[in-house]
Image (cartoon, rainbow, N blue to C red; front, side, top):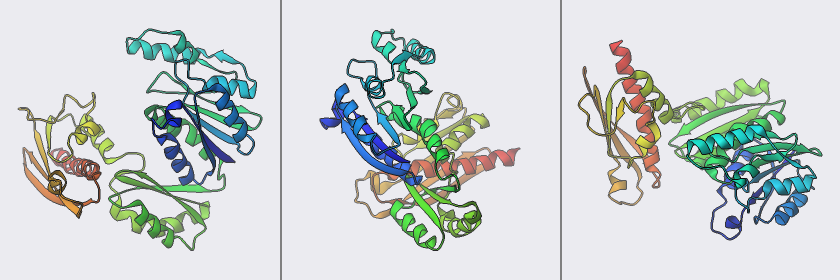
Amino acid sequence: MTIALLATGDEIILGDTLNSNSYQLAHALNSEGLAMGRHLCCSDLESDIVGCLDFLARDHNIILITGGLGPTSDDRTRFALSQFTDSPLSIFPAAMEHIENRLRHSSLSFTAGNQQQANFPAGAELLPNPNGTAMGCFYAHNNIWYFLLPGPPRECLPMFNDYVLPRLQNTQHDDTQVLKWRLFGVAESQIAQQLDDALAQLDCETGYRLETPYVECKVRCRPELLAAVRAVVEPVVAPHIIAGIDQKASEKLRAAVSAWKTPMTILDDVSGGLLQTLIQDPANYEWLSFHEREDSRIQCKISGLQEYWSGQPRIGSTTLSIHIKHPTGEIHETHELPFRSPMVVHYAAEWSSFRLFQLINELHQRVA
């Protein structure tokens, strides 16, 4: 099965918006070993979308369409799909309920444009959108799969990751399995070359996806080769693992703060506020502060990255220090981080999350 991507929108055609969705989707699909075909972009005109669908449907079994699912008159993707497949649109009550709930929570009124967002071809399967009013859909017609996804990346990419990619994974490589590792502090090209060389004698496919500051590595092979692949890969990747494949270090720390229920302060002098954005949420807000608070039982200070913040050119590495005060004493440690680009602050935020979780978790276990 060959996959095509169609990005719709005048803003893409005119160069006002970078088509980042297609880049992200293609990279993820290719890293899963799924066969990629053509990428097209077109305007918001319904006739242009129909023309692109006609062209792509000749040589592709799966077409992913992004954009044109909004509430305005130029959002024509659903109408173009209806015209091309000769499938009348109908209102889906579940989509209508979703739209009404989103608007109610945002104190916005329901419009005729919003109502068009509830229209899909009969028999389509709705794809949830927790980040906006535009639900997507999966629609099968004449042995071709169509996926409609919203245009904004914050809506498109989660929908793709949660509802489209799993379906495609389940229909491809039925006789193979995939192993995944999330690596930290290593260049994508470096680890790709290293693993490709190490696995050259095994019948397997490798894939890589950059998710700064992590690199996700995948190896797909037959079940009988899983042990051999692990034996080759795990010694190579072990020094670069600070998080599991399902949870980043910052996500793990964020959940842990809620579970610990211990008042704590983190004074962050390295990430420019990124660390707070990553780990603070309503569930841990009462326990976690990023400024001095009198009731803190654990006080953490993160400092370093002097070369970056002083505007010095990239020098290969920089240092980060973590200092923790708690009722039973103090902890101080310094680490070296790669400094290859301004993304060093992302490295610092994730590494700090990794070490803070380890150190504070040990303190809790010691007290318990």
